[in-house]
Length: 112
Image (spheres, rainbow, N blue to C red):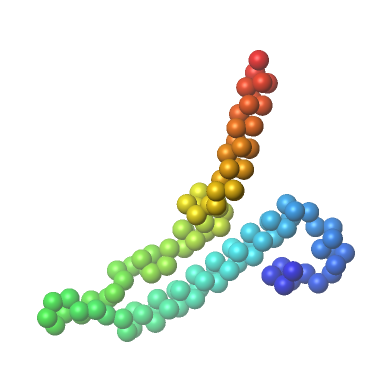
């Protein structure tokens, strides 16, 4: 439980799976914020140094804007909406599809 800063086994034992999921999502969001800060610092350092050649003597920045360097919104969306990731394994996708079909079936039965 090093990621969550929990040391009390009684507290860990009382934690539900839902609460664990929320805590892990919060931890991943904190890490994304930290990555953002680190990338922003690197961006500022880059502003001073990074240039590329354009033409014979002209030098231009390597990245036109910060989003090309680090896409914060994409990072957050990957954390908050993991089902939209293209890398979802086939077992997870199968379970997700089965749950969706069951929900639709229950809704149809309830309307009869």
